[in-house]
Image (cartoon, rainbow, N blue to C red; front, side, top):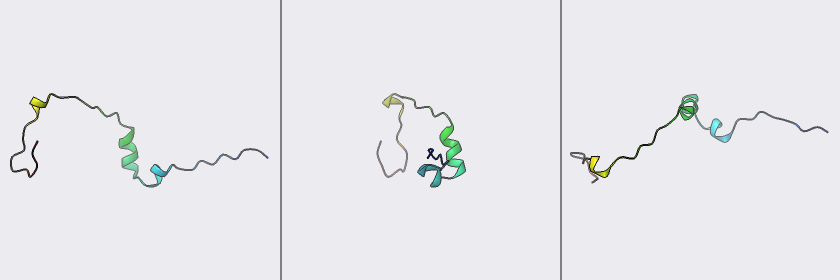
Length: 48
């Protein structure tokens, strides 16, 4: 008997929206920035 090939969606495809799947295909850029370029947020409950 031959091998059966089913085109089943992945678990991620089952539990994500079309928009999320399209966004995940977009290239994302991660940049390193110096800590001195980070400013505090006025009236924010957490400290940087």
